[in-house]
Length: 67
Length: 239
Length: 312
Image (cartoon, rainbow over all chains, first blue to last red):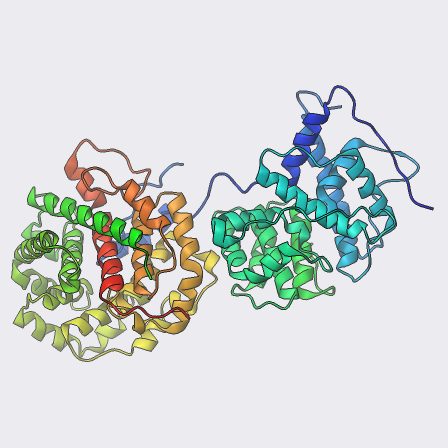
């Protein structure tokens, strides 16, 4: 015999449209909107200051950019 | 019942977490099935929604050990698909993603008495057409297809473009988006299990995600599936 | 084959960067004080930018792919820089004072290649090149390569063990590509610059490094373009030209061209503040102008004159 479940039906207070939209947003999740890719770090400033004595290494920005 | 303070999304998302956690436990402890609901009781709608969201992944513990989809889970998934028809997505792209997720669930249900396999959705564009970035983002949304015994056009695309999957994974790692990264790493693990050579060492990636993941059960399930695909059944512990 | 749209964009971007750089020095920005040359704690740091402008100019002249106007600007910049360096005397003095310092030799190499030679400097460099101390100095692997390339282009003996030097860099280890950090990215770009002598010898890049870069350069360019790190993105575009057939396509060039302002300036990063003072702009962004000139020069030279290394 096949298993059968009794399930709640949608109530009027939560429209089928809202449910469907919510479901779609959980099924198709987008990637993180804001990147947290590596940038100049003050912690690495020591290394950069040393490097600054030498040619063609980048000069670090004065402070970490805020974003 | 959802109110303004507890929006529907929070309610459904919490249910997804519970179902993912239960599935993860089955995968790791080797229990038979998830027993997500008691057939004699009324299944809450949020649980049904969660089952609809996780779809093919509900069968991951069985497929990864070489078993066929079980009837109880299949009945619940079939019920969820009946209760929630293909949801209205925000874009054509999203509709296609959902179409392929449903294709995967349908293929697995078709092996049970609750079968309802439909026709193939429209083909997805490849990385040559839309770039490796956009293509890999879409593949991350289709990670539930990366399961043993499922095979189709999306899998062919994954086979043919493992470098693009690897680039997508590295891109997400560097953007510090482990949620998307783990889904792409899962595809790479699938490709490895399929016999494809990878240009990215996957073991350190999965290990990194183990430490720096988003901590949700849904992502931990993705990670556990990836580990199992990479190593086989004996070595998949994530916690 | 580099697509022609990229070459057109590159040519304009490089030309405008060179014009901005040239104008800044013409206005007298960042003039070298004689006393700063031996002062390692130079707070204004005008020596390094001057040497970098000279490098960019020397590459424009070396590759010969610029139009007559740009070639004239490059020649004028080199002349001006050589003159500010006392026609090499200040490099000699700096190298004499600091035996194991890398940059006087590195700078001299680019002048020497362009025909600006200094007999006493060459004698000194040959002499200190025989010191174990100079080769044992504890600097980054990419800095050792800078020295090696400078000796190569100046024709100085002894010639280094290139494979060993290449292996000792971060890139030489072919590290997990998702571990790269901002500072490391600059080490990678410089490893490639020096191994290939700024794109002139793509075949000198060890094959495993080339394959590695072909795999991951597109990712690195993508993530740093997204957060508008224009200076680093420009260096990655130079690398793309240095490894043989470019792999990153148009996106980087188009983004950098869009970031270039009317006067030719490209900010080092998108979030850099707007300055009222053009001299402050010059100080902050002259490195990115150098990068723009070099990126365009190497891209054009590889596409037009160089023999690209075929994709594996």
